[in-house]
Figure 1 (cartoon, rainbow, N blue to C red):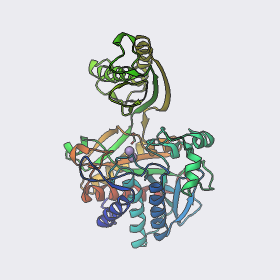
Figure 2 (figure 1 turned 90 degrees about the vertical axis):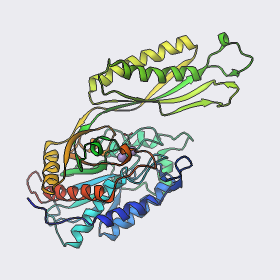
Figure 3 (figure 1 turned 60 degrees about the vertical axis):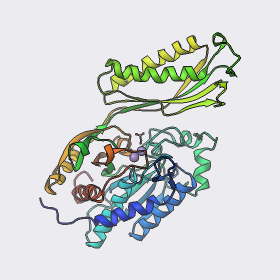
Length: 423
Ligand code: GLV
Ligand code: MN
Ligand code: MN
């Protein structure tokens, strides 16, 4: 069926640029303007206030829950029916671009503005949401806000999480004025839709406009504390050392070997993103290292095997390097498939707009995977330039790519928002 309504693409892009100015910094390596809005930082607070103001300007009634998730609601003609929700996150990693998460929130808002402009009512209420600390880049567990809203993580456990400087989620939510009073347990919406940048090279390389997201791969994070013995780099014989830096390096190399061996298939992803030696000086053997491990795979069983092998390797390295290694599993989510109905409607909407599309599994974690536990949920991906680089200031999707995602979001939103069954 031919779509009768479209979003305002330039308005959507302008709103992405405006939000991208909040928490902007000059990246010293690329010379580009990046974004740093770590969860519950002052910049995140400013970003949140900006988006809430934009929600209110679009006529939405805004509520904030006890974990800081924000929901802007537009009335339906039958307002008692469960709403259709569009959302994502506006917190960022410390070296972000302007699109990750923000596209899903601002495309949702743009859909609402376009409905308003056209005086288009919907049977069901429509909600635009942003969830807290999706990145896990500050409090070390990802999808925190949506995991609390859907019951995977209890509120008190979330409140007690601390950042590397020792500040708690609860304190920092209070500091930015976003510890709301709405119940943190979300009443499941009729459906949840999230538009997002792919954050990878697949769609762009295939010349596709839209990714029909099949699901999100399984993710496992460890935080490692490696304790050795600090010593003078020139005077301490090698045989007397307990070098925590060497232990971390061996684990990092093992991750690469696990991938290269093929024993875990072709799709194991493995990253040591944090390697922080103490005291971090040229002439001191590191006595302590804090490190992280991120492993992912679309197959739960494969990820489980990889994690078990790693745990044994930590013990081996600890023995051989005369260090202690303690690990904490800070995040663990299984493969999450998205609803067939959403996948089919995304595909049909893209086809009706003459867009090229392909099915894709998400390599990144998303709030939609948490929502999928409680309601019909799914995602729409748009391609990114430069191999889809993300978590980096170079992250870029064009105005046209973003508008395509917004239009498909609009079409799928309307299909759910006007249906009465399953109320
Ligand atoms: C979230 O961006 C992730 O790490 O997948
Ligand atoms: Mn994201
Ligand atoms: Mn991200």
